[in-house]
Length: 316
Image (cartoon, rainbow, N blue to C red):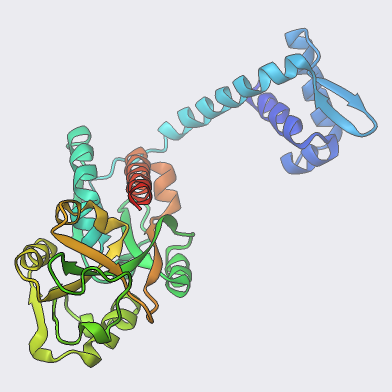
């Protein structure tokens, strides 16, 4: 039996119309009919019931369909093996909250399994600027998007980004701060605080997560109350020691912080500002299709992010 015959069988079973199946397969109806009749003769069973309204699977046809799909998937996978080109490295560009709390465990698992593939993780303010369509030098970009940025990044990538989780930026405060028991907080209420953030070049001129968030906040802040530190870990450490500091971080990702779980820091939604957006992963679809290691990495990031989102939902 030819593999194409199995593919014809699957398409016909799903379309339930010989005319539609023939169109989808780009073959003539007589050609499709002969192929199915040949398959029935070879197997010695009837696969379809035929009437004026179309075709439906017989009981035996229903039993065979899932197995036929599996065989075709195996066959296509075997064909792809011949197209695989080893890749020496994968570059990941991510905002710092994901670089520190989502990706390290993922990359540790990946490196143990694939020691010959280097994974370079870089924390940047705008990961979408590093999007690439190079199939054999794959780039993954993980960033928080509003609708406008999502469309621009998808256009740059050449395919839609993968939404990982829905969230928003929250204000982070020491649990002993007088404002820590608020249900929501405004920028104005933070005016006298010391704003602590990770040093990032071009932050005050940045787009959505910088411009719409930080630039408005900077307008009301005394420059002497703005403190830049080297890393997100330093932000957390400084916030835990001082009650007068504040910062911003992406929820639900911030629920992975030990300091949040231990009750040393609290996170409060910000009112009166556009702070929400989806965390999205952008990658080249052809690279994903050709390289199993890229598929594996993308799948692990997706599943881990969904687990974080689920845990945050359960803690509410």
